Length: 339
Image 1 (cartoon, rainbow, N blue to C red):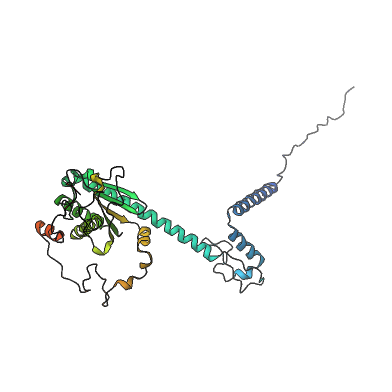
Image 2 (cartoon, rainbow, N blue to C red):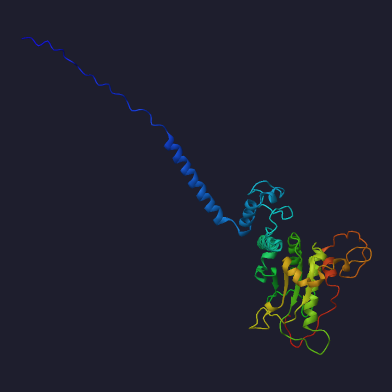
């Protein structure tokens, strides 16, 4: 018997899953943006100063008070926002940084930077002077008698006596030729900086004979002044000399041996501005008092304010004679020896 039932084939159609959309990506991006903004706010709060926090708080309390404060933004790259208490709707928001404190900080910072620049300039001057001594054959022979050092007052140049090479004649302020060469060579380099100088003369502890009015104090002062005149003859401006002083034997270089020749020396200090102000004291602001009636600066020698004609260069023998015109002879001492 034939089976006439039809054969039924069921075909199941398979469809790919539909697109679920990207809504989750937008949500995740919003979350990441919010977290970034949150950490950015935390970082700003940790780095902002109390004054900046106060100004930002004032902006959110009263935006009207900031409408004419110089910038429409909460934070301006050109500076911090400024309060406008006279236009604010909250009169109690009037606090702002104390101007005196910020000004004082700025002044201290500027002074520190100026001192650093000045110290670097003096160090360059020291290096240049050392190079000049090394490169000059005449000065190189006396480099053991020349000492350079940076102190709190400035660059100190000490030129000392040696047992067989004194800077001055016996008991006199008459310059030896080699000492004149040292000063003349240094004058051109020292005047390259605007700092003033202080010149001091020193002797050893050996006293003069007799009971006259002339002693180590007068001798050391005369020697310091002779060194000043040599520098001026070498082209150094006389107005840049802040002080010429004699210390006699009150400030010995070798205290263990008061009669050591190194105690007889000339100190030239290229002063820092701070040391110069301390030296001049209250006389610094009174610059007009040091002028002549015609307005020209008064010269140390008391000359008039008229401009003198440029002098002709002197020959070496004429220069030495001019530098030593106030020395008429050699003073007597209680025992032979160099002073």
